[in-house]
Image 1 (tube, helix red, strand yellow):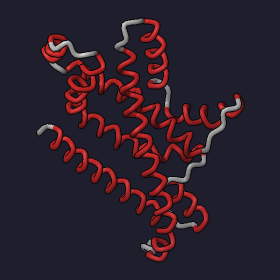
Image 2 (tube, one colour):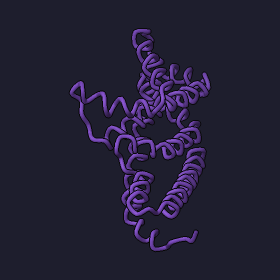
Image 3 (cartoon, helix red, strand yellow):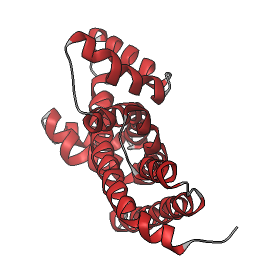
Length: 216
C-alpha cells in the first residue's frame, strides 16, 4: 500500500471545514461546562436542601449516564416534546452539560482548598457575601483548579467525534464521509489522528502557560 498525496490534497478542504466545527464545539462546550459547573457548585452550597437536593439529583444523573445516550435523547426525543434545535447546538449543549458535572467537582475541591482564614478575614472585614465570593474565594479557587479544568478540555476534544451520531460533521465525520465517497481511508484518518494530537498538545501548552501566569 502506498501513500496517496492526491487523496490528502483532495481531503484538505473537508478537513478545514471539520476543524472549524470541532474548534467551535470545543470552545463553546468548554465555556458552557465551566459556567454551568460553577453554577452547580454554588447551588450545592446553598443553605436550603430544597435547592441542593434537585441539583444533586440532576448532576448525578447526567454524570452517570453516557454522553452518547444524552446526545440521542436531546436530538431525537426532545423534538417529540416540541423542543427542536440544530444538530450543532444540540451537540454543544450536550457536551457542555455532560462535562459541567465533572467541572463542578473540580470547583468544589478548589473552594474547599481555600484556607478557612480567608473566610474569616472576609467576615471580619464585613464584606457582603457576593463580594466575599467574587473578590476573595473564587479567584483563589479557580487559580488552583486550572490544570484539572484543562484536562477536561482535552477530554472534550476527544469526545467531539461522538457528535457524528446526531449528524454533526466535525473532523472525524468529514473524514468518514470522504472515505466512503472516495474509498480512501488511510490518508484522511491519518490526517485526523495527527490533528487531534497537535490540538491536544497545543491546548496543554496554553493551559500550562495560563497556570504559570495565574500562580504569579
